[in-house]
Amino acid sequence: MFRRRHTSHFDSTDADQRKAKINELKDALGPLSARGEKYCTVACLARYLEARNWNVAKARKMLEESLKWRAAYRPEDIRWPEVSVEAETGKMYRASFQDRERRTVIVMAPAKQNTSVHEGQIRFLVYTLENAVLNLPEGQEKMVWLIDFTGWTMANAVPIKTARETANILQNHYPERLAVALLFNPPKVFEAFWKVIKYFLDPRSIEKVKFVYLKDEESMKVMHKYIDPKVLPVEFGGKNDVVYNHEEYSELMTKDDIKTANIWAEDAKTDHANDVISGPLVPEVTPLPSLITT
Image (cartoon, rainbow, N blue to C red; front, top):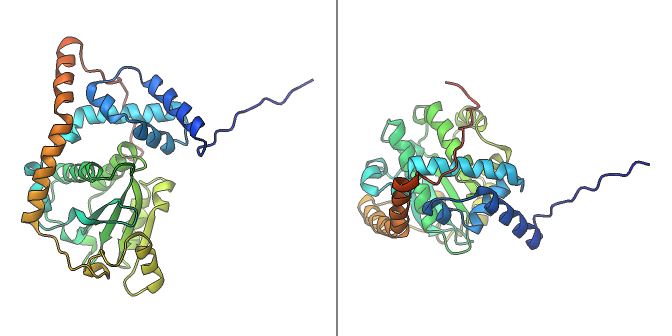
């Protein structure tokens, strides 16, 4: 009398099913700006779907929020002269080496914090993320974070406001970009701060965080699983004597700025023309309420 309703099971390893979901999401987005079209590659759509367990409706909502954020914040238009002061101490930079899978590595040293302005720190973070993505090899979508806690104390802890916005940007606008975050030699006092930070992170992000200690041989095996000791800097227990040089890094970023400008230049002209004629082709989305109130 009663028949069990048949529910189709999605298999994310099935190429045809993945393709169907990606096409469904692309159709659901509708017309986009020129920059939106360039941003929404097949790989991009797949990342947003992955972040929402291949639920098209949820992925669409997430992606529309990102498109709105990018249209307003314009991360691809941030240039080195605007953020270079943030990098003077080498507190965050794209490493000259890659991990074993040729993924971009971002080195962070929170004890070298040299500024206190929230907006400047966030724009530097976004600039660094965009630059890391720019330098990913073809076919690679993820990056690695190598965070050095040498000399870190609670005095170096970022304000809750900055930590919250950082987590929001990373999880909501750069989904599935992080392969692993290697926390090197975090002091005992960091445990209290980590409990606060975890509150802003989803379980998928927390699983990607690995604690590594120089004097712990087993934990160093985790480090070496991702980064070959031959390219790993000496300060992280490796054999590479490379050190951060701000002048050389500035030259590298200036060259990368030219690459970025060339990538987005024509799209910017097209979008400007569209704005004049009929307004921006960015989906109207109501911002999601923050999980935390200040």
